[in-house]
Length: 492
Ligand code: ADP
Image 1 (cartoon, rainbow, N blue to C red):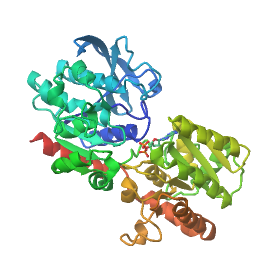
Image 2 (cartoon, rainbow, N blue to C red; image 1 turned 180 degrees about the vertical axis):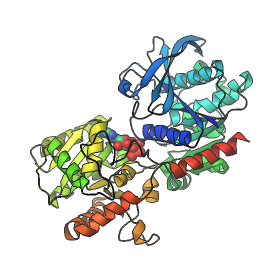
Image 3 (tube, rainbow, N blue to C red; image 1 turned 90 degrees about the horizontal axis):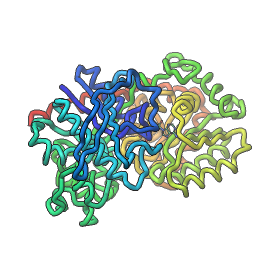
Image 4 (tube, helix red, strand yellow; image 1 turned 90 degrees about the vertical axis):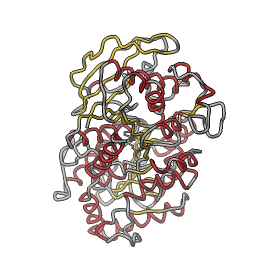
């Protein structure tokens, strides 16, 4: 099959979170399975150009109809490891992708409506006719609408769309300007409940709802989150829409790329190790301590948090976890960045408070290289999320021999199985510690059990970590599931 992925991120070139990992990892797996895969991405000024090989102009003068006029674009092409990527660069006053950021501008809906329009226009004029176009998150939610309402009449009537929702919290709710700008026009037609009208604001359009209603198949990134999306309020107002569309909605668990995330061969690690040669992890732990100037005390476990510092991630519990771990005689390492100033202030104050503590390091910012060393060097990863569509840090942590301590929500339910209590799984498949209530008592009880095992029965703790490393979290199974979905919709 010929598959084109259209997304706002692709790791490691453009990565704000898990979306980037998924777009890259899934594309690679599909290529391994023998499919032809191409990616279309925005050309941001701030992306990691050092991870693109052979960047060159692929299409010189792409003329994108926009706002009643034309925006001229250059389409660049290059390889991101094994993935062939096309990067769209508009030449317009708005400077949509030259702002030193991926997300966070007031006109984000217009930026990504433009990107979506340009991606379709590129497919049209370059005569690319994929069997399936795979769109991701709200940024590309208007693509199926434009395909069905405009481009199908220009020779793209056979293309089918798979739409994946990575996070319901950000839906792209905006005024109707994007309708006129993209040439969809007709606000009266689109502002209908069964089309793209927001479910709560009758005068707004909702990009994610557009993606759900107009795509041939819709999924979120774990089976449990798919259930939550329909049966709880986690889908931020889209539950009824999903209920109506349930026959084409499902959950497919994310994998991780086993080449990018491999403790046996990781360019960011000073050593290599594996489940069969686990002692290397001790050296990684030493390297992490050296790098972050933590006390060199071999008896202490290192507990880590890696992730966006956002309400979603349960930040109040993250900060409690730091103090609880230190009180219990462990060390703590945090790598995270906040986009909200209140949360940023909170962790800056925390960092100041703990600055002189030799058992603690808080690194505020985004640092891909350091994240690899933390996965390798730390013993446990704590993930107290309020909600978690899939979550990748627990899976990457498992691959690197960390023991996850997680709140039982979303994809964490599908990937972490409690060492003491998960009776539906044999001991040999259990891999971490799970708590359910979003409060400090629940968090402490799970962290306490993990720390007790580490201190009181280190051999068992090591066995648990190695057991986690041996399980398969690669894209192999989920890549096949996506391929089955594509096969199913292309014959519709
Ligand atoms: P989300 O997509 O909600 O941000 P996921 O757990 O699905 O969370 O994916 C997070 C990805 O981003 C992982 O690859 C993780 O290592 C990475 N990551 C998150 N925060 C940082 C950071 N501050 N520095 C480096 N990598 C980070």
